[in-house]
Structures are given as structure tokens and as C-alpha cells.
Length: 118
Image (cartoon, rainbow, N blue to C red; front, side, top):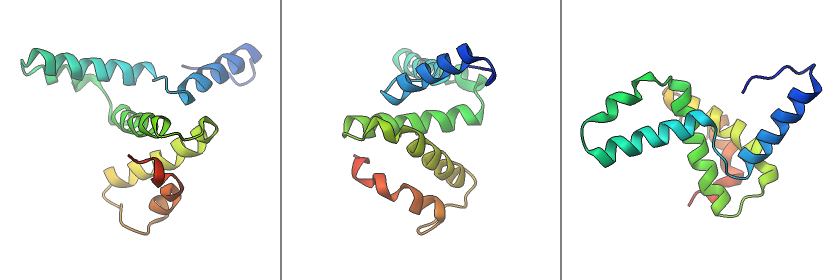
């Protein structure tokens, strides 16, 4: 969703969508990726090729929303959404960049949510 911060209706729409995402809703790109993978597995036809149209950032977002979904089921407060996602997206970046290690700032930043990690 694109929005213009100087347009009040855009800001309200963005906030409303953000609230739904915090409750466990998924962004369209994540939903489509999930369905594409699901259909490929269901058909067992090597159809993973259909996922080539996604960008690495889409994959990172999918991982973050997978973790968020698990945390919501485990009882994390929805008000934690912004901080949770920001911290976990930085952690995912470090994992993908091969800079992840115990004790890094990215690992320390997500420690407060370890109890929701299933």
C-alpha cells in the first residue's frame, strides 16, 4: 500500500491497515507467496518456479510475519507490533547478510519476545 503522509485519508487508511496487520492479518505479497508455495506443494509438480517473481525483501517480510503470527498465537500484545517487526526485520537482515551471531545488537533487540517464540 502506498500512501501520502500529507493526505489525511491516506494516513487513516494506512493506520487502519496497520492495525489489521498487527492483529494477525497478512500483507498481500505475503498472502500471495503463501498461496503460491501451498499450490506448488499441493500439486507436487515442481511448481516452485512460480515463486521466482518475488524479491528477497518479500521473503524477509514473509519470515517476519510468520514469526509475528506465532507470537500472536502465543499471546504477544498487539501493541508490540511496530517494535517487534522493526527488531525482527533487522535480525532477518543480519541473518541473510551472514552477520548474525549471539550477542549482536540485533539478537539482543529481540530477546524480550523470546517467550513467544514457540
